[in-house]
Length: 408
Image (cartoon, rainbow, N blue to C red; front, side, top):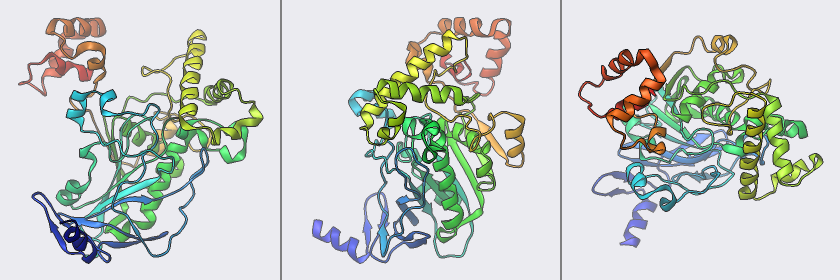
């Protein structure tokens, strides 16, 4: 059976399963990029490409175009995902939650600047709208393959669009501000966002070869992905690379940190690792687990210092994320300058029904009506009655008190 299956793959013959029709082979689904040709596969009539490099970079340095390759690059499986601050497995995540989410954790690697493409055709002459998906996980976790719903096949097929999803640098690798320690680190405070911009530049240069229209690109994301959408809308150098935007459950991001705070975090990381300022380059070679632990400790220390000074820390606590660097991100996301920058970009914004899962994490998964109402009264005061009525209006058939969580 293995020999038969291998023969089908090599000849490009059709392979049937109970659920899908899949075609692959040496000359099947070959497309061109500015770095070289790539070969994907066809699944249920959708041309599929995974793990295409859109950039490469040394740790903490700006992304560069990937080195060109000769021949045809096989691109049929997902690329590396950004390392997590705390590596996760099913046991640690919880059996029941994994049953619900069915995560695919992938394999971690710092060379994670890869993208995936799903398209109905690469040769019919159409210019299809492009949907550019940015995964959730805050600014610290997640990947383009993390959930089954991130697979772009159904959207490409039903919407007749080209779907692109990306992996990019996260957490300390994407946001540690080393700008005070050398020109090569100029953009280190916002490398994660810069990776996204470079991926959009890849789309502009290459997506026509995949049946997409580079002048009709919609960026969309949920939760942390939605917050990244807002960040890109406030990024001057990303202007014109996308034309519409969708933010689902990601409007929670308020003001970003400034250089005073981000450079203080970096100084604390060096201190934890017992490195002098002139040894900052050593951070490029320290094992990620050690670097991650130092970053977590530094965030905790700086957060305590900020509280003592009466400075505001967001509701999610001090964590890795974009910051005001005066260059890539010169404006706060909701400032007049940022809003003017994106004033001609149509924005669709919404919230998923059970967005605030934090209530579950805080022991509210089985909260009674009385407990929920008590919480709402403390929060809403004399607006409680009108608040509850407004929440119930869109979901009249839902009797669970947890319906209120998404608004609390």
